[in-house]
Length: 148
Figure 1 (cartoon, helix red, strand yellow):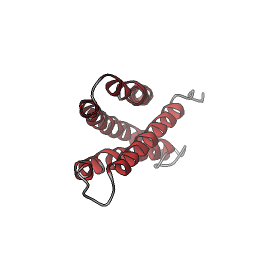
Figure 2 (spheres, rainbow, N blue to C red; figure 1 turned 180 degrees about the horizontal axis):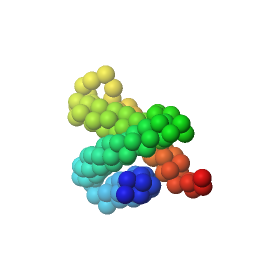
Figure 3 (tube, rainbow, N blue to C red; figure 1 turned 180 degrees about the vertical axis):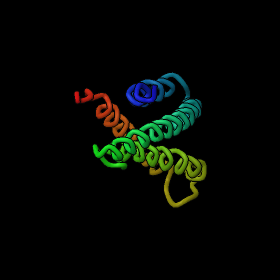
Figure 4 (tube, rainbow, N blue to C red; figure 1 turned 60 degrees about the horizontal axis):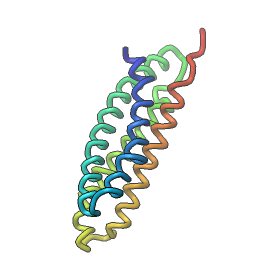
């Protein structure tokens, strides 16, 4: 069961991130007033951040066990490439959403060291990096299992 989740979840997660970036966030700005669209998109990103956090932690626990078992059998390291990719996604989620999001209201009113545009740009950068990391993870995990 864990191996199936390990192979399925990264692909589903990548699909979610691509749907958020390419469909769910542009649509409100095409149909609603800018302030209303911003509130809708903010809510979408709150949900995405919590889902990303949960999926990353679940996959990290699964991958940790797999990497530990492989290391004990002499077939790899306890710190696998997949674990590094997952740690990167966790960093991007925490820094990009939970780190930057609380600073946005102050920046919108002209307070703080960075402008709203700069913070928004950093947030987009973290989301893009997370998407690339998840796509790389899905690509690595989906490769065929070598026969023994």
